Image (cartoon, rainbow, N blue to C red; front, side, top):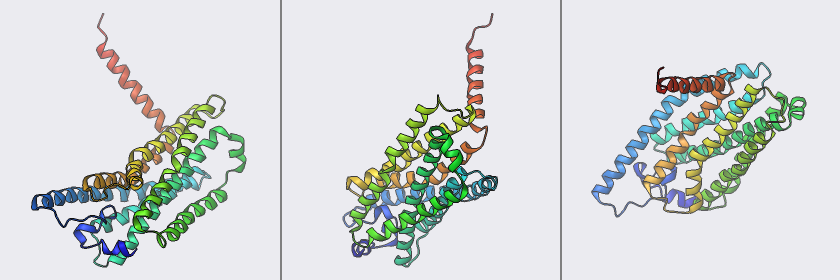
Length: 297
């Protein structure tokens, strides 16, 4: 952690966790203007993401809570996922308007990383729960209950905290980033397995067809969110490349910060009839285009 403090030389140049190793001692005035413009654009995008994400996340949590009261288990994991997203959005506010005390800023940095790990954990829980509905319907029907889900949620919240506290005390921050990258990469085979296993078991499942479409939609959506928004940062963590490349760091940082907005789509896919409406609208659009393109008799 000592090196972490040494590399924080000014608020403007170091208050983003992805740029803490940057060294701008030899840059020209044009480069300085370029870096300033990139950071300004990045901060504007962060403000937009936070301004849009905070109210929508609160609304989605409230709407999902009403489903939990009706003894639905799946929304519990999504509610916890959205709560972790809510904390991430609050940490983004601190990134845009950093405090003068560096210790306070570092606390928010680790809170942000911790909530990222928690969100990945709940994405795995959502995928696993959807997979069990199709692959093991009887086991899921008799074993599922809110108490079990609460226990799982508590474990998901505790494990990353132990992980972060255990490793950041012993490793250099660069090594710590690689450890974070490995942790974030571990769920990839699980997401692929859950989606592949679900597709394989669809034909033998007695789950209603609309429920099947929602389940597959959620699994595909989770895999897309993980692949498009998390993998760029994971690759940078593991590559040990030039962390001072402000373009790559800014792009990967914005991708990760878009994940709270992307997670909101899980709420949409959990609602009954949503995928059917999407498919019907697509079919209607195709039918209309075919009618327009077909020659009149």
